[in-house]
Image (cartoon, rainbow, N blue to C red; front, top):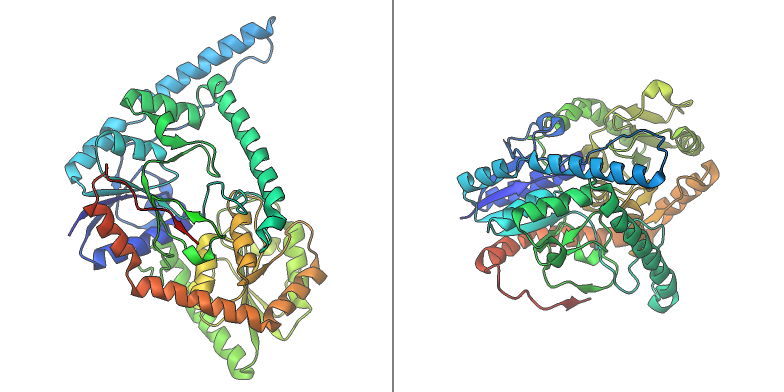
Length: 465
């Protein structure tokens, strides 16, 4: 079939997605090679990959705090930053990545949307490139707020139009200021990308969009594969170059070293589930986990969560700490809570009656694939508010407030979730959507279409939904 190069972003959730995507492509007969910057996270994953040799790293330049003349301070600081930026671009290693691509001679290069420097090199050298995106829609549409905003639009689009519009105006103003500051910084990511594009003679400004929900930019003239359910989006017109191929839920992760390490807990989890279900077939099993990416002091939230589930001793709760929190640092753990440094999430979700999660895309789709209703407590970080908004809008779960909810609110939300027939029915509907995309080989059909279409061909028409 085709030779495909995949350039992944080395965070765990995305590597899980890439593992399933690669598995499906290889099962269809494609020859797939992962190419990525040398990174400890890539090495820890255990996935075989070739080093790209390319890394464009923003530079921090310090200078003396005091200058007799402010203008002189600004001028010399700017010169230092721009000089550091030029040095970073010169040392980025674009030539090494280009040589790697030419040696592999791929028919298609799939580049994670957060790896724009790799996309720049591939596009500038004439390779057929596609953006790989795990995020929901980043662009402005009526009734679709920015992904990072704590705003759930109403089903009545007219009622929520003004809050959404205001959220975008505020975001545009912030982006305008950030882009103006790029000229002064000279060494941040946006500035380096523009300098890198100049070196490659690539028209970055003309073919990218800096005013969307992802910083610093995305390519508007490059095809995009989105690993989300189209049905879980907020209603809007689908952009011409965007193809939704469904979530890459990896039920088998034997190639991931960090997931294999989690399997050590399988025997303990299985014994616990057997004990709970044998004692009472109607017993409730609750899964709680908040990923392994975000760090910070969450003592208050953990305390309230544990106090909440402790009020329902008839529940059995499996709590996965994601390697972020030491068990000994937790407040008093109720007897019905079973704590794991790393919980085998897919194993638990096969039996769970509800899940309390942070709203990461991997967890959301693994819950849906196992027909598990969700209570989402998103972190104040980029896309999780937008994901939580879609969970609530489509009725597959409830959304809480990590900062304000206390034990009474948390246990009340869980009581409501567990008692809701409507939520369970909606979750079952979306599980069927996931199975449909998998059965229909939506990813395979999208890849074939991209391989058959010349880069200069006009994209398909916008699909409204």
